[in-house]
Image (cartoon, rainbow, N blue to C red; front, side):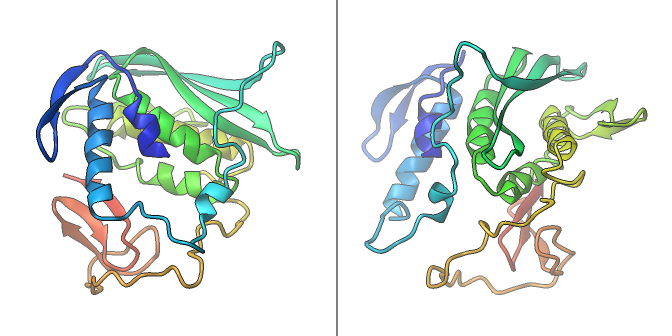
Length: 251
């Protein structure tokens, strides 16, 4: 579902790309779309997208809206914040569209950017918007925490810490965007300031009978922030937990 969304992402960097396996030239509307096409091809080649009888889809079932809800003429609630990174030239507005769930909880369900920023971030907005619509906030919290240490070459900058008067250095614009979104969830009482859910709902638990052996043996390393085990190692240039599979900062 996410790949299908990304495959339709348009940008200012459209180009022709030879597609595997026969090199057929196809027009890609953006670099993000090209990445999604290649990823989908490889996943299908591995048979990872095959759906078998009796297989449950807990994450799809946990969405309170598969498509972004459309507003009526009265509009909807939203939260916006300005972001500027002089080093990278980014200068834009981050917006979160919000709604009230039947239980009275106010939740973001979509994000958007407007201004000067790399158009590849439109793909990130689409993916995170879908993650926001998983009923268990632990899911979006996990996704946002993975971005907090995301670095970019010469992309680090000083910015105000959300909710405080002091300044702090952030490794990239993406990392600061994730920090601000977590702060908004904390303002709404959905996540804490570290990105963990205030109330656990259990959506992240793997259904019994669908746990597959990975063949990866746990290796001693640093403490993993996701599972707490001392099995975080460096693999292919990125932090990788050999216990839970979490991927951290790269570079």
